[in-house]
Image (cartoon, rainbow, N blue to C red; front, side, top):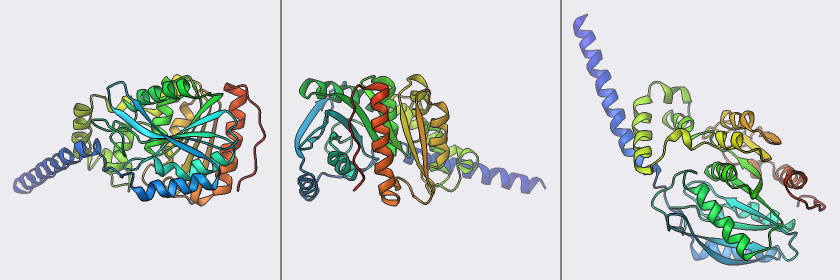
Length: 318
């Protein structure tokens, strides 16, 4: 009996040490996501898409508060309605990841800003912080936009990491009148359990694989200069009452719907929740394109009456 206990204790210790080692490897890498380069082919494809909807684009660069240079595009339709939308891409992507959203928004008269997030695409920045620094990057982008363009009303739309950044940005930037957010995490600590549980169950991340999660998050916090709980879209919507359209994908195992539901419960402003039954992570547009376009356009029109003073017709989805 004693021997079995000792063997069990040794195996448990080996398991814990192994998990700590894995967490030590994974933690820093999360702050350095793979860069998706803005290749000439992607630029040509984007240029063609803009030409098809009669839009014109220009390069922009913005200096972030820490000195990092953020790069992106400012795109305007032939007949702009005066409103602008900030588009936020997901992790390990670049501005072209939001092209499908840009096309239907441009067709409906909205101008868009498509930026590469810090430490991703063509933008500078030491590490990606999932909203901790990015929300203040957004403020610099908004300052630049207002200094160089006529802005009637400003909105934000993002997916996954981009949705989390959009919500946190609106929490500190009152010029953002409303946010559309698909597949956002509720806070960085909570979503770490999903990743530690291999997207099978957050319970695994909170129990069996907790040592790996603890080490990974600890190193992220140390190197990123933040606390995981403070990277929180859930707290952002509770802090400032702006309108939100929250979209969760019913078959999303990467960031399950419980995150979006937590954000919805915390939101203090006008709020809508749309669950897309069969969609995978960030798959709502592909799964239900007509419904996505209709809901977003109707939400933006309604948000005008809450935070802006414009009134315009909403065209039918293409």
